[in-house]
Image 1 (cartoon, helix red, strand yellow):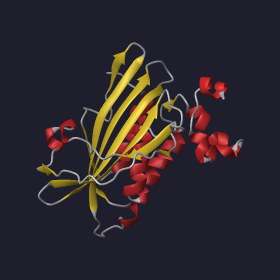
Image 2 (cartoon, one colour):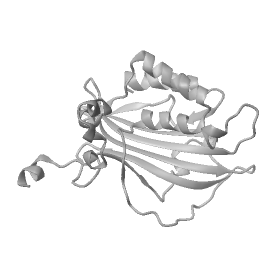
Image 3 (tube, helix red, strand yellow):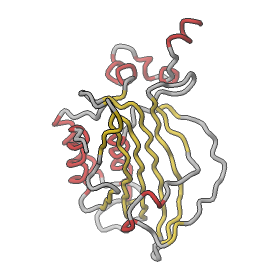
Image 4 (spheres, one colour):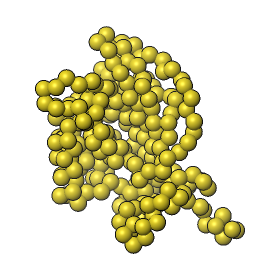
Length: 236
């Protein structure tokens, strides 16, 4: 196994900020990163968030709130050379409602994508709806439900919404912001900011980060998040 410092640091801070909320992992630690081939590392892990509040807006102390289970399946490839670069990132998030009998019903699934070789008309970073929830086969027996209901497959059009760079760490930060009390999010935010931490960047991050928006506000426009390979641009 390989130690990627940015992930290890984040894992410690993230788990610390969760208390008293629960998380289980399909790997022995927060993330287990293996050598894939010469020059590449591979991350493949499932994180199970149990009985999280449905919304951070409904977490007043002592108040009864609705709860969700959330499954996160992260598959990422990184360069082994430092500083590590993310070559590919597929993060699937499934939200489930679980009743008292431990019967789980998928509510919705989304997927965040990044590919090192973006296609024309394809946002460099994006998310889209997904009709296939995370398979129960991917996580340990201790995380299994008594029954995982089949998801009713309604229409799910393949539209893609451009996003910032959403690797595993960024997705987990968003889940804390969406679901846990604001004190939890503030603790995580303050720790990240005070330590000057950033996750491993993707190859195209320098083109699309918000810091450049100070010099070129157009970077915030939707169409600025699409990438056109150089040969195609030259032909135009």
